[in-house]
Length: 298
Image 1 (cartoon, helix red, strand yellow):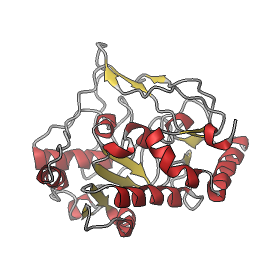
Image 2 (cartoon, rainbow, N blue to C red):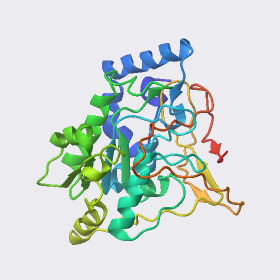
Image 3 (tube, rainbow, N blue to C red):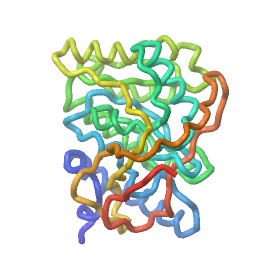
C-alpha cells in the first residue's frame, strides 16, 4: 500500500491536502510520533480522532472556523475538536465561558456537557493549530510540523471559499488572521475565553450573533448554536490517521442520541475560577482500529 492510501482523511480534504501530507516535513512528524510511542509516551487524541475536525466538517460544508491551540493533554478529554470534550467529562473553564457568552448573546442555555460534535456537523470547523500532544505536557508537539499543515488548511479555506466567518480568540489564534483574506471573509477577534481573560472582552463580544447575521446577509444558513442535552450519547469516532497502520470505516459516522438513562451532571467550574486545560479521551496509544470505534460516556 502506498503512502497516500495509508492516510485516513475525509476525501474533500485529502484531495487538497495530499501534497502537504506527503511532504518531507509531514513524514518527519510521522516519524517523530512513532518514536514517541515506541518510547512509551502516550499521545492524545487517539489516532482515529487526529483528523476528527476535518472528518466532521468537510471542506465544502465549512461556514465558521474556530481556532484553538493544541489538544487537551490529560486522560479522557481530547476529541480532535478544539474546546470540545466527550459527554460525562467535566466541562473545561474556557468552554464554560463560551457557553456563558452564547447565553448572553443568544439566550441559549448551556447543555450540561462539553461535546461540540453537533456544531462540527453543522459546519463549524473546530480546528486546533497543533493536532497532537503528549499526555501531561501542554504544547509538547508545537514546532514539530503541525502548524504548517493547519496553516495550509486556513489558507485553502481563505482562497477557495468565500463568505466564511473566522472566530479568532486570543493572541495565538489572532496571529493566524494574516492567512485570511478579510475582503472575502468576516474575521472576528476577541480575547481568549480562558478565565484569565474572558472578562477582558470575550464576554460581550457577540461573535455568535454577528456570525449568524453575516451568514444570513449573504443568503446562507445561520449556525444553530444549540446543543442537545447529554442524555444517552453514543459517539462514533472519526477515522483520522497518518498512515500509522490504522484502519478506517469508509462510511462517515455522526454522533446520535439513544434512550439510555442520563448520568448525573458533574459540577461545573465557576466562570472566574482558573482551571487547568482538560485531558483527552484515549483508549491506548495508537492502537490499530479496523473501524470507527464506539465510545460511550464513562
